[in-house]
Image 1 (tube, helix red, strand yellow):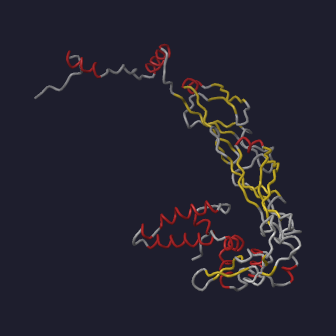
Image 2 (tube, one colour):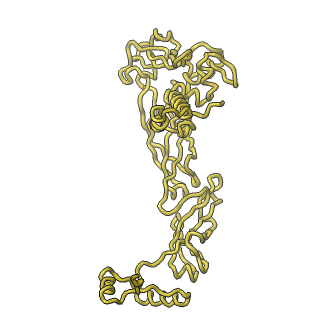
Image 3 (tube, rainbow, N blue to C red):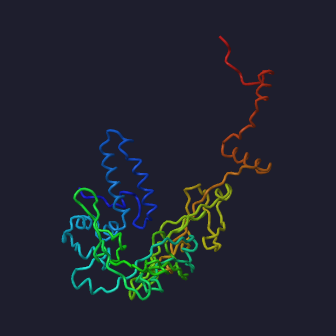
Length: 384
């Protein structure tokens, strides 16, 4: 049986953070734990499936391999072999670890300095901002090469030395249980293949520092939740001489208190009086953008079943903002809760015309007790 996607197993998206992945795992592990479900073999299988997915996605190295090559890539990396399903292990490890693994053919050496990693983040926008487009100023944090040592991590005037732990390869293999082992960045040098006996004081030998920048971003009209906006050249800095990565923003549209989105259409509920629903007629409402429009309520409108369409007042198309969806107005007939004497008289007259006798005022407890004492209450069955 083919393995399920690990993200699907945990019920998270591919953009999920480490915190979201761990939270999802803990909830499912508790639900499917064998101790909580004694004798249920199917639950045991699900428990092991959830555990396997979490073991991969919590590990940065294996997660990168899985994201690029899936289950086949993990199998090839574990066996140390190549080929199969178009997976080239040397290329795979080169992409995951950069060029610090050493060796390989001219193809990897020709890549030059490694490009910076991408930054992924979530950008929240209101429904109105999603409809009209908006310019936002955001602040991002990224890794930059240390200006003091130019990214080498060594004190200016000194040179890094080869790491003795990995002998300059930058990688070491750790056991994953059984016969399998997985590569990870060398713990002695952090994957660089070299150590700094005399580290740079500015970056403490890391070669990297944290930097911040403000960025003006234009969010186009029509965006929806999970739409990705790519901003080239605003990710982490690469190795010295290499370009920066990209900033990848995933849009998340907040819920609106009045309007609900359904694709390119908007849906809202609009209250109308009992009289207006019965007689029909024009009413005025405000759209999402605040524009006033007049709609015609049909005679005999029914609550929650009468839907009016206002063309062109929905959400714009992301590819062509000139094209817009519609606004669907669901009528909700409101029953009056407080009547004036004149209104009550009219409604009683309407009930008589409908053949429905108007209700008589209810008697309270003491009124009913008075009827029992005086004998004015409804006749009771004669005792046998």
